[in-house]
Length: 249
Image: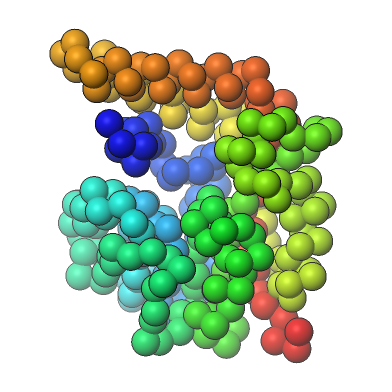
């Protein structure tokens, strides 16, 4: 099994591929999209397009584009859009987010938990700025470390530039961005996400016949659960911020 397939299975029972509750997702989208209910949204690293499908159901005049490198996730996103009746307003592109070129700018750009795809937080901000229409906003989800120094594994898994929450905000300000709203994931949200990730993968594996896929999925769930509980549960945090660029910067 490829890593992307494991990730799709692990996220199948959670609202989005990030540690946020259903209510938190709705509140953040409502805050962002009230500025542009009749316009356009772009999700860079959209995966199965869960954020965009939700946004399209909330705002019937919105048009949306999603970009991701996982074709199977994009197929799942198209099916989800069909079930929700919003497929006519959603275009999904199989492409590297660093190479995506848009003909128009967007009132809302999303990149939640996907800064790794750009090579870090600063490259993400640099890539998004020219894609935003005047007055547009970026919904950005980023991890941070809140208790002492990150472990070597945490830096390897979450990125070498892993810092605390104040460090994330300092980076944003240095790059010329202002937070206008935000949500810091609670311990309940973080734990629920991890239990869902490992539990969904385990549940899927137990329904499979004996073989390599079953064994690999169970091993991945067991390894992930051990690392969560012993290496990063007490230090890992996740923040989702609604940002506007400083046009004078």
